[in-house]
Length: 101
Image 1 (tube, rainbow, N blue to C red):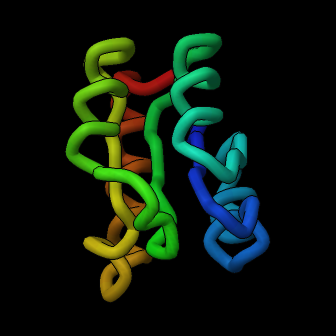
Image 2 (spheres, rainbow, N blue to C red):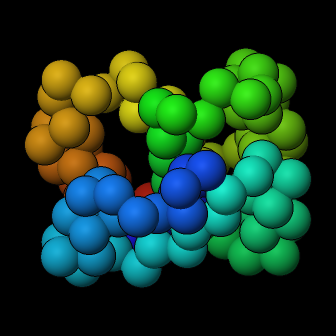
């Protein structure tokens, strides 16, 4: 699955590595503006927002993402931090169903 990962540390953490190890194509950006540009330019199956990225309103960002790509899954990782493995399994199940780029 093509995943856009928004991380102010530019994907330097273990989450990016886990995604790559699990076979996902990961595009990392450090700012919401870069993410919006990437979403307008390409298709993604999911957008992950790093926990440290509190510089913008997630709800506004999700609205903007869904305006450009209504089908994309958007996950603030703070919601999933305790169940990260389950989140990856969910993303992979969506990919296997054929509903994700």
